[in-house]
Image (cartoon, rainbow, N blue to C red; front, side, top):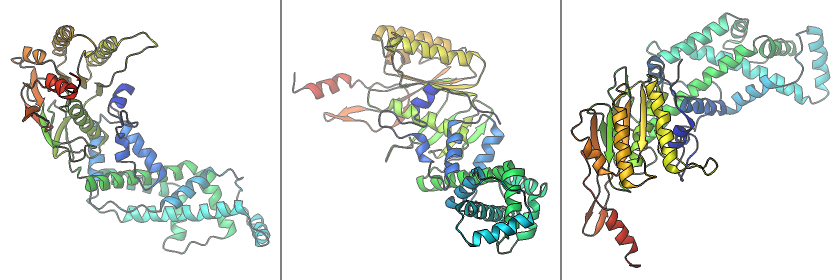
Length: 435
């Protein structure tokens, strides 16, 4: 399995794990798993997107399946097995005489250590039986990911002494003797510890799939993106996952590999860029996307420049931080990787003329990398119009206008270049009592 390349700046910009500026982290959408280790696995899935089309499609198919089975044990029972496997009590080799002597001794006193072992063994036996039942009852039309889990369960059990447990306790009440407890404790915690852990990992994959399926249904994330090996990129009916009552928009890379997004301040350019990028990110995780439909290339990397800090420690201005970040992401593009690169309000840290000229220079560079897709937002309309006839660029804008002395911002994404000039009106409106 191979993974999509990204970096800490991108994860911070998209609030993948930690929210910034009061934003919710993307991970929080999918964190309500049924098990603690399922939560850890979900975190791994959402922080490590894939760039393997077959692996992505396997996850998508499993999550979308309507007949996902229940977990074989509940959270408390699975947690206890994990605790039992890590339990530091000495593992005894099975011996019938020692087991009988220990049994008589325990009749006279409470043994907390023995309780952990006995319950741990009993639950592990139940686990093996439940996994065997899950495997044998899996329908023929089950998704490939679940079929692979079933095959792994079968191989793990029937190529080891674990098959003895299944054969002895299948469809029977579990009440093992002291000798059997010692025997299986040695088998589970010593001989086949890693096999048991591997079987538990299958349950956590099922937990993640069930959670993603449930979240998709409850939040209306009905889109299962079509992943392609071409550079076709389009999203219909997308919305930022944390925007309550947000407007659904459509977007596609209609021309070339550069999309320039214009619009006034507060029109929603940054949120729209994040919404598109999050959709692409989730698509590469194999997770449901907040959109109606989506066609997405399998990218090798995703890089953003949205919330760049300046650096007092390094004596670096915001303008210099922007230059260095653009240089960094263009080196990724130069390596030949298929990348999605997001540049929000390039060169906001300098004057308008410098920003205009620098933006044009960067845009000229981007043409050299047709294997990458670039989304650039700007409030410098002259920069967008400079490339209006360029067939390597397409143009969208966030609608905003002044009507009846009111700022109207419908958060609608439209094709073309914005003509809105509302900055002076906003300044005048907010400061009119001081002027």
